[in-house]
Length: 430
Image (spheres, rainbow, N blue to C red):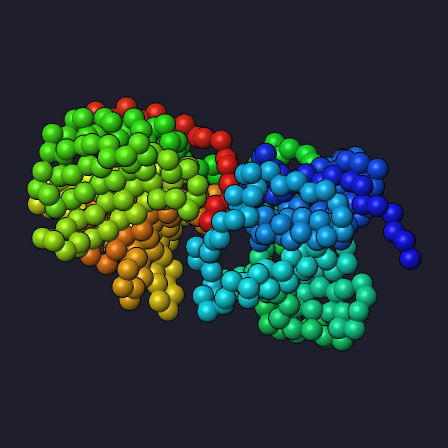
């Protein structure tokens, strides 16, 4: 049986406003066939020649690459823009995934199931009757419009939503839900999460309405872009006479403390999420005692880097105390896990995480719009002294107060001329 030639061109690119969503633009005589394939692969139409892939698991580059591979096999001409290809080539890991024993493929399986449930609800195949909050997660009971086990209990939200129990009888499913969650039960579906709301707006190809801003997370505090880090680097080491700065290579600046116990490297070419922009090492004789690595993009580093270098240059006689006490007094929220403890601001703009049994990166500071995909990360080795951790925690608490209206005004360190700007979004957080 003969088939019509796949005479169409599909161009995949990152969404300009909603990373890491992907836009597919089609052209050519058989565009309709290409669009049909794209729809089956999760893309939704936003215009005569455009379709968008927006997922709750932020896996759009992975699935866009799979779609491109499949369409190429069908004979279509496929183009992937360089920024999207960079995202496809970059592996990532969840910042605080609740199932750390899962492999990368298993994580994708969990997310894919959550995506199917999300799509079933959004497209009316799964009708939610009741919802509740069990103290930690959103739970719900709903009914599929067709199928064998039509009635289900759901647990979790976004990329972690799963079917926990199935029922053949609707009355039984609803009665059991009431028994389990009692006075917490509310009618209808739970309010859309910020991510669900954003996805629906992306698919509908409409901007965020003013009335919807209340559903979106608060804006991040001002951050410094790459240009500000260049200025910070110059001003800091020009002022501090105890540091000797030189540019060993075009892409790297190295600064050594006069004590020869601290060394700082700055990569001028660091742009991607997986690149390391700042590396700070403290030595005890020939042996490296502590190591700090800072990843770039939407960086909050100038005040944090400055706080660390001040401590390493001249440790204060009196430190803020235990870092946990510092964050507790700052009203950050603690969460305990079997192998780690995390402290987060109420708005979840930043997290300070301790992994006491780790032998390498024992502490981590990370933040961004979505903490599951941190936009920036600071890693600290097991040799970092507690005083430095407390100093860093204090600086982070000043930058991200729990109650901004009552917190003291934030000031740049003396002598630094680092302007606060928000650079354009590039890639998804990891």
